Amino acid sequence: MKAVVVDVLLGVGVGSILLSCLGLLASGGPFEQLHFTGPAATIAPVAIAAAVIVDESTPSSMAVKSVITAVILLVTSPVLVHATARAIRVRRHGRFQILRDELARKENP
Image (cartoon, rainbow, N blue to C red; front, side, top):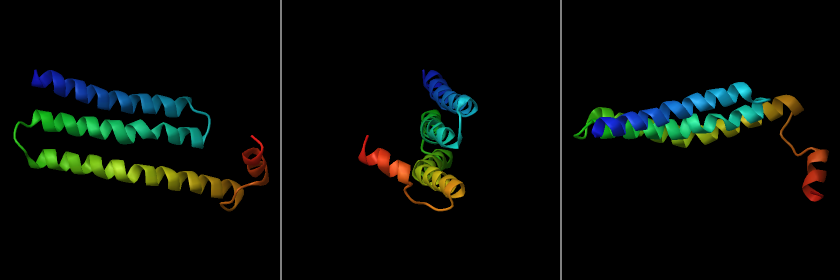
């Protein structure tokens, strides 16, 4: 029974990474591609860490390291995505500010 749970959790982790990769290939631009990094950086580490915890019947250093890795990825991934999106925008427009057409769309939806 434990092996089935571990296999399912690993399948969820690997499946979310594969779907993220397919989304990256199918998306149009860099902002759309950033959306597809989410599942690979959130669902996969949690599922894989859970699989390690279930597989190790007693608390072990491997389980602790996998949980720490998952937590680090969960905390740093949103910051990295935001910084990357901001860098893309600065590179395209020269600086980070609201453009006139964006402001007009915001005021008159």
